Image 1 (cartoon, rainbow, N blue to C red):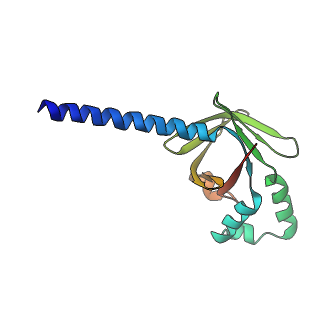
Image 2 (cartoon, helix red, strand yellow):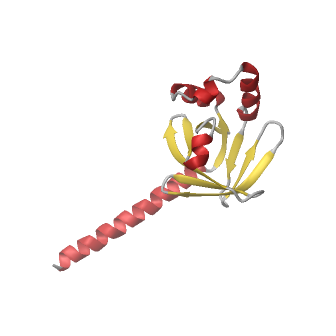
Image 3 (cartoon, rainbow, N blue to C red):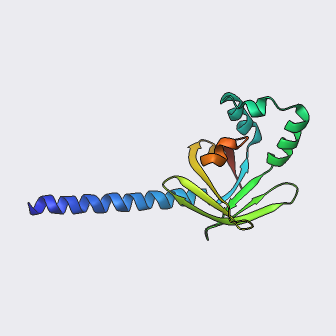
Length: 147
């Protein structure tokens, strides 16, 4: 009976330690600067049947591309992030990661943005969740690591 108790305790310890290390490894992999890959992001929207994007006229698509091309996210070890546009606009806030869900909290307005994360080499895919995601033009952003 004691052996079963020891095995159970050891198994529980192994699982909680492994989960903690896996979470830490995922957080560490997120650190650094990532840039939106606009062609991959638009291709994913088109293949998912995103009619909102497909039905835009060329002039509106040009405005949208100006917003997303060159958009960079930088995730720092201290839990802060920045989102920088090529026009010089920078938004900042804090980030946290739990169970594959990335939460960004915008410092200027306190709004929480929730993303599920996945990898599809060479991309990190941030898929916006919740009602905000359902209304997003690009629910999934395909990001590439920048040096």
